[in-house]
Structures are given as structure tokens and as C-alpha cells.
Length: 259
Image (cartoon, rainbow, N blue to C red; front, side, top):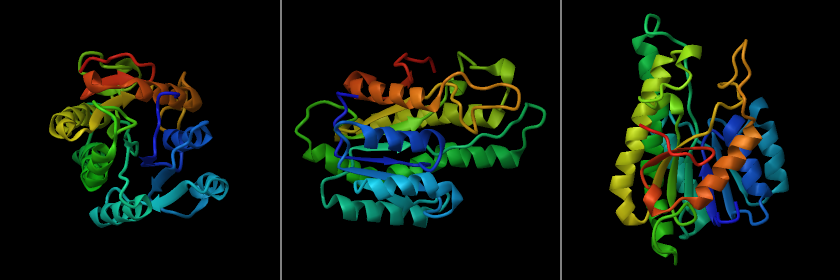
């Protein structure tokens, strides 16, 4: 992570799993960001305990309530972040919050298709829209040329399950709504790259691997990649990204994935 020099980063879905590990590793870096904004649906409760312990130890960590299903909550979160940044802008937005529903072609429902799409595609779009002015601010104020995650970037947490060519782990589960939503998120990332690259903002979709989280594990099979290894790998990859990677789709080890 030596090449990742951030003044500010925001992680959605930061109270558990990959999001929480992002917060831990960013704070534990030898050169931590000046601000780490950890967002989750509620700023209190049992699932918040570990994040709150981190906040007590790290004055640069700010927990922010952000319900990605509520446009008013997204707007309020952006305003709060702007208050902390005081004109410096946001370097890195990690759209990590997401969901999956077990399903097959025969069992998939319109309700679950709509819910998973809204969570995994529409809400990252809305969050990115809300924080776009702060990302532009960071890009404009940066002395760096080209594009990088240290300057200004949107990282969308995708999945190789959204690769139409690879059909990752199809033999273990069809999860139709999840696969379709991640394919759509990849397209959103490409559109963001085309729309925001001229403003100095990098956009990339990242597959974290098959990770040992509540979402990744099943009753019979444990995922092969630890949360710690996945996030460590992703942070290294993010430190290497540049203009040629804008709109790309990569995994936690830096491998370029097919659409």
C-alpha cells in the first residue's frame, strides 16, 4: 500500500466484513489517511461495537449513518463529510455495501430482482452522485497528473459472478439477481469512467475474491480467501491503478477480468 497516499476515504457498509476490514487496514497503515469515513445504516447497535472501538482509538475515524436506500440520508451524509473536509475534497469513495439472495432461474422472484438491483446498482449510483462534488474538489486540488486512487476515485465492489464470459462459480449457485446486478454495476463503472474521467476521477470495478464473510460462506463450503488477505490485496491493487485502468474490472490480485 506504499503507493496509496490518501487524505480522505469513505467506505460504505463499513460495520462488518470487507467494509470493516478496509477501515481497519487503512487506519493501521504507516501513513493513514487524515480522514476515514465509515458509513453504515445505523450509527449504534450490536453490530457497531467493533467499529466504535476503533473510533475511540483513532480520532481520524468518523462513523456516519448512511442508509443507502434513503436519498435524504445519502444527502445528509455527504453534507457531514463535507463539513469535516473543509474544502479539501474526498480522494476515494469505496462503494462496498451490497447484498445477495440465493436463487435459481426457477425460483427467482421479481421482488428479489428489484431489491438486489436497487442495492447493488442504483444505490452505488446515488452515493456516487452525492459525493461527486467532493471527488471533483479533490481532483481539482491535487498536484498529481493523470488518474489515481490517491487523487480521486470511485471503487465499486463488484464480483466475478458478474462476468458474462466467466460465469464464476456457476456450479455452486446460480444467484441470478446477484449475477445480473454485478454485471450492471460493471456497466455503471464503465459509464462513470467515461463521464468523470475528464474531471480527474478514476472509476474501477473490483472483485474481492471469494471471501470468508457472511455473504461468501455457505452452510457446506467455506470461502478460500480471508477478509484480511482480500482487503490487503485490494489496497495494493488500488495503489497501482492509473489512467489506463479507468473503467476497468480487476480482482483483488490485480488480474484484469473479462466482462
